[in-house]
Amino acid sequence: MDDIRKKVEALQGNIGRVIKGKPEAITLAIITLAARGHLLIEDVPGVGKTILAQGLAMSISSSFQRIQFTSDLLPSDILGVAVYDSHKGTFEFKSGPIFSNIILVDEINRTSPKTQSSLLEAMNEFQVSVDGHTYSLPQPFMVVATQNPLEYHGTYPLPESQLDRFMMRTRLGYPPLKEEKEILSHPRIEEEVKGLQPVMSSEEVIEIQKMAEKIKVKEEIFTYLMSIVTATRNSDFLRLGVSPRGALFLLRAAKAKALMDGRDYCIPDDVKSLAIPILAHRIIPTSGYGIDGQGEESEKVLLEILDQAPVPL
Picture 1: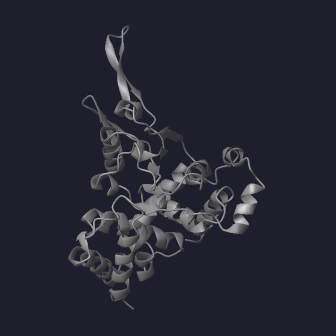
Picture 2: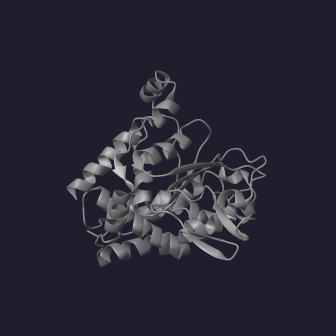
Picture 3: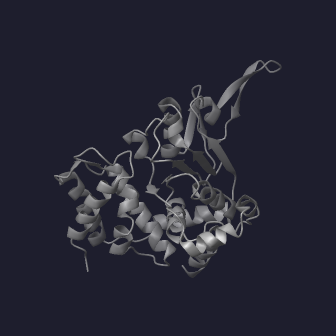
């Protein structure tokens, strides 16, 4: 446990060299990776969404691909395509950028629903199917997607089924004044990102993922988690509660957080501290606002539920 915590601290510090003043966002990204999930970052342009994904990829010894989503992007541009080889007389599959460890999907809501849906199988089953053949994706595998929640001209809002595939949704916000001054003193941040050296191997990431699955969870923690999930389904302020997948993601992330903190067991705070980033984008308030916006109303309802849920001692 001490070795894992030291490795995680080294990973946090390495990413923190290029993302200033956002330790919580960095921690959430690492927890998502350890829990074998995917991360959606919603915020205005220029606050470091892309840098966070690049910093995470460069800090582990893994392959990285950035895919800029545009209106004319096709599923084959992501997954790959079968090309006819005239010499062999057969079709040969040419893999697309999805066959990498860390995938940055920039502005995911800028492309058509058909292209967005091409990510579903990869995110859920860690494989892709092309022309009747199934291909496994490299491990570890994580999708980090970004989108601007304030501008909707020419965009295709993610449907609920797509949002549900993301383990977490977070926002970076503006950096504190002190850290922003530091950013201004190092204007060529892109070069600093490229200069990051890995502090963790892909094999170590996979080992951490396996260890996270083995974290102990007492019956009281299961009951506490389900009391939160059930409350979202019975709330008069919500017309869509948390799905079973959402409950499973919350459990997996809580285990990963416990491991990050150097424990082999979960505590109630592991569940409570992750409830907002994991559950807020899975619920719809009765007013209808929140599923594709910033979600302040969803978060308010969740905070009330968390305050009322009995915490096991």
